[in-house]
Length: 326
Image (cartoon, rainbow, N blue to C red; front, side):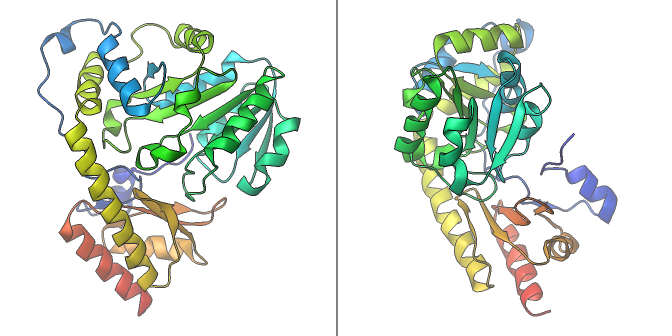
């Protein structure tokens, strides 16, 4: 399997310490406080909850959505819904997209964001992460909709992964997902800090959602996950407060990194920058009990999420200071 962030057990085994600050994932470190669940959430088979879909449609601005066991489930399933196709995936970006399309007989090509526009007419499927993980690059919604229309004209797809889109709602094309050929992925794990639920949503035409649901099978999302997510998606007060806090913390991180000569890009939830010595920097932070995301090859550099509290910020500030003055 591919390497991802959040692997604290590996960090603990390698470095022999347990007091980690995990900045490796870009997940909101102050996640939604899960409510107590009714007993039937655990006891009953998890039939679909229209209230969950309604709450998600309201939050994401989508006309219809299919709940899935994290967007990862959809990423792995979508390549199985098409015959062999010419597929272009934005790069560097979330590596599971290319990994999944490359396993099912498709012809895969990776494209930089700058070259994506020129790949549309030579592709059957184009996959774009927007905003991008890890670099934070973006594509304007009007451009995405143009690409989707051109691809759909010959039966193609534009797949837009908006897993980190909650902090940039103006970029979303989820409202247009009934258009032919447009598929949008959304995640509950990042903004809401509920990655352990394994819950995401797919917006697309009804025929695509039906085919995906049949492939994934019954009971794809657990009852507890549905109950917690419905509460989170409907809590507008928490959402507003969280949006404001993440905006402040994102600016704080950008400024802190800038003080140490690290010109970072990203989103409020994470920052990335190219680094000439990413392995050494990763090792340095690890010795301070800070686990960051190291990119050795594509997007060679470092990605940092947000500390959970002031103690975490202070530890990060100390580690950055000692790195700058080594």
